[in-house]
Amino acid sequence: MKNIESSAKSINRTSKSSAVFTDEERIAMKERAREDGGTNGESAVLAKIAEMSEPDRLMAERLHVIIKAAAPALSPRTWYGMPAYAKDGKVVCFFQSAEKFKTRYATLGFSDKANLDEADMWPTAFALKQLTATEESRITALVERAVR
Image 1 (cartoon, rainbow, N blue to C red):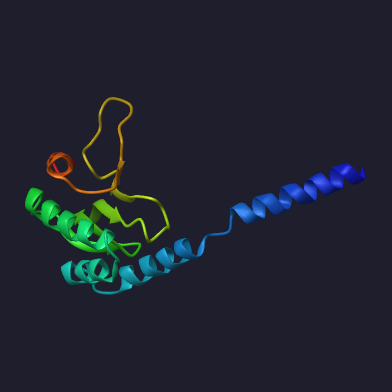
Image 2 (spheres, rainbow, N blue to C red; image 1 turned 90 degrees about the vertical axis):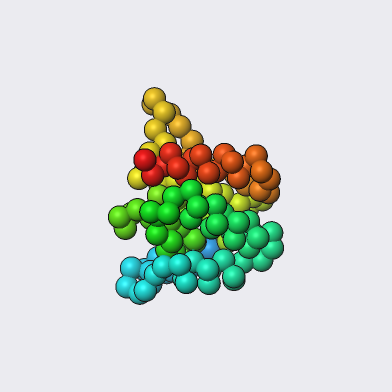
């Protein structure tokens, strides 16, 4: 009986700890709550990009230019404290710096509002280590497709 009780306590501790958010996740959620009530737009996106360290900042600056050129109808805004681009108020794509969540690469992500559907399975996020002409061309095509 004692082993069952200690197993149950261990399971409870495990399930409780899996519900705990990291500091980075808590900050992102607080930023998201502020975004809903405050002003947003290109100046907010440029401010978030300016806060980033290299190489994330350089990549985000370049992505901003690429996305605006590929899809002028998208509106820059922040989303969970990240640069994002929306159509009709709904986020279509976003940039997550490697530094923000302490990952080894930055991410270009697409929401369910992006028209990237391919059969029953397709990628919605792409790891970015650097931007060369090849990646820039691929990103341009993805963003153009996402807003069709």
